Image (tube, rainbow, N blue to C red):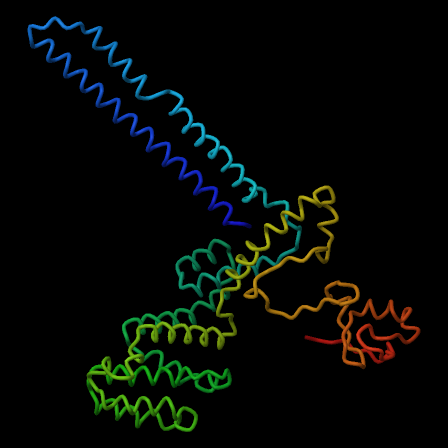
Length: 386
């Protein structure tokens, strides 16, 4: 969807509207002034002994107004605005196709799984009341709410961190230290580092040194550089913001730490850091215009669309939505599927199975690799798994 063209069209309409308003307001101000002047003249004539002709004054006012504001001037600016306004809804209708049902496919979905994904999304976002209401109205078994309590604990930790209280986070990291190490995460070290900096920020040098002696011993071998910086910070106790290590006090460090804790918490739960429902909807929004465009072409073959296992045209998505490797056969230009998997040839090059079957005359003879002159025995080709 080209949002820029919509924005440009809106800007044109807004510009025309401002121009029309400006000219109209200018004309109204001029007319108002002329009428006020004429009223003043009529009042003066009434209060004096002058026998001024009111009809003459009104006729003069009418003439001035006609000379001052040609009707064509107002009509011209209004016409330009109307033209711009008439084009804008058509562009919106073209860009935002209201009938998205064309891209719908009759797919059998597991309602319980869908409800689990939706409820999980609410709990992961901290919307516990909404999640509970959804589970109750969907009449799902209470077992689906088992995912609730871990997220409640996570948000309690995050709320404490907002108040610069790291005790709940440190307690959780200590109890899950082996899992964090298995994930290659140094979250526990970062939490202790932040706690040390907080103690030092308060100016309690002795308490900071005591804390470091108790908690840094197990991290010395792998985090010597970080610990060295912390020890240097002891020199600037109480005035750390004026030291070469003032970056340790940045509020952004707390945001990064909270994000890292959330990521590791979800990982240990076996859940994605990004909400699966959110990712699915975002990918669908990006792909929908392409599917609608394709369906406008295929509308006469609706049944064919329902039975299709693979789209005949690629649907491009951003890298953020690329979670699996995709192989396209260089010979057939088709994307690999379960029925037509990529095959590794003895020479190291890869083709899809159907291409190998075709080139080997139904696996009855050898053939030359299209990339190198090696003779390939189809029996030696092996399925390749990404």
